[in-house]
Length: 268
Image (cartoon, rainbow, N blue to C red; front, top):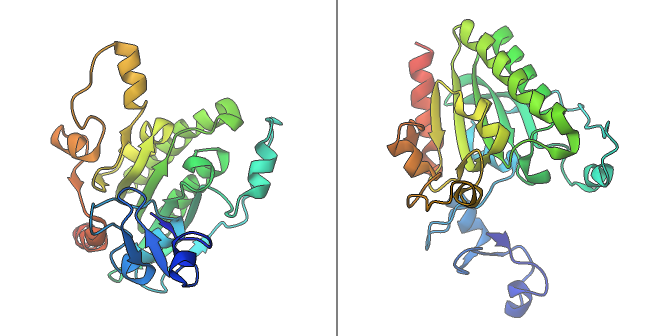
């Protein structure tokens, strides 16, 4: 779903832009305020809007508790990949992930949230570094860790360096596990490629939103490779839950409550 812009519905209705929201899937119109109160899920068809990292945090943690850390880690076009510097410069957000300290139902956590709006949430060196720093902060503070993933996978503009982040983040999470702290992974649509093949699926508890695409390669690529038709619902969160790869599928409006219950257990 996207805000209705000037020259579209708002203009036709004689109302300022941003008052209405149109479902990207079914086209139903809603007041933006009502839409956000429904956690940006279409009440008619159930379509889950992809959230920005900050909106995701707003829906997940206690109000006013989030304190962002390691803000000024800049992405560098060290390979001089054609067009990469322009994409970095023109993006409205800093990177594909933000990290910080927060509280959920009063429980302290370190949280890392990916943003698909920055180059498809792709994992480059900054994403890997920020996750490692989030782990280190969690160990230092003795807080449990939450990572919310939304990614198309490794960032091709950084070549093999982006693939190295898979090992780097996985090794950091092994240290977190050795420290006795919990890692809760939340997978949203989409969580694919190198992110799904590394930290996104390594949680002590793996939670997914409904109808989220989760996997390494996409279904079409797999079908073309193995020359077989895939089962219905293949690589969506409900299918993965049924086959034991996801612990639980949780509606967005209940995510915070579920996290509070999980944290209550781990902080005993």
